[in-house]
Every structure is written in C-alpha cells, then in structure tokens.
Image (cartoon, rainbow, N blue to C red; front, top):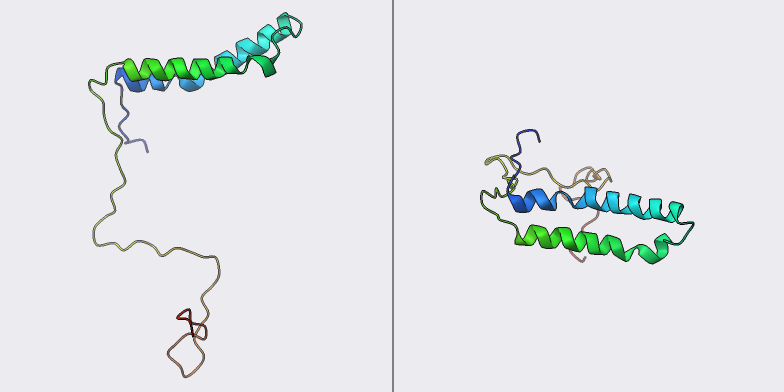
Length: 108
C-alpha cells in the first residue's frame, strides 16, 4: 500500500477534508450544548452536519482537477489462476471405486 500514488489535486484535497470537518462540527455542536445549558440540543442541530458535508462536497466539485491522478486498479498477474473461493466446508472425497462425488448438483 505504501507504493500507492495519492492524488494532490485541489478537488481531492478538499474532499479529503470531509471527515475532519464533520468531527470538528460535532465537537462544536456538543460544546455549544454544554455551554448553553442544552439550548443547542444535538437532536435538533444534526442537520448542521449535513450542511457541512454538502458545503465540503460542493467546494470539491467546483475546485480544479488539474493534475488529478486516478487510483490504480488491481490487475491480476497473467498466468496465475485465481484462488478458488472457500466455502468453509471441507470437500467430501468420492466413495471408493467411483470417479464421481457422492453428491451432485446436476438435478438428479
């Protein structure tokens, strides 16, 4: 993961501030609730969080994307088959003297 290239365009930089902005907003709302003796009850002020998220997303959408770097998608190595999915149940060996497993899913 350390070799992953991170985008530093204005849009991605502003978008990465969403989490910290929400945490600061929640802290300010709780601080106002404590200082004002319950006047700013969190149950009534939670739309402020939605407004902050919307403002950050709007700022990111209007910011320049010059120099934007797309995230690298996982590319499988050629020649290496993917690992089969594990169901957590060990496979049942076929009965002695037969070449088919005892249970089939072919509708028989």
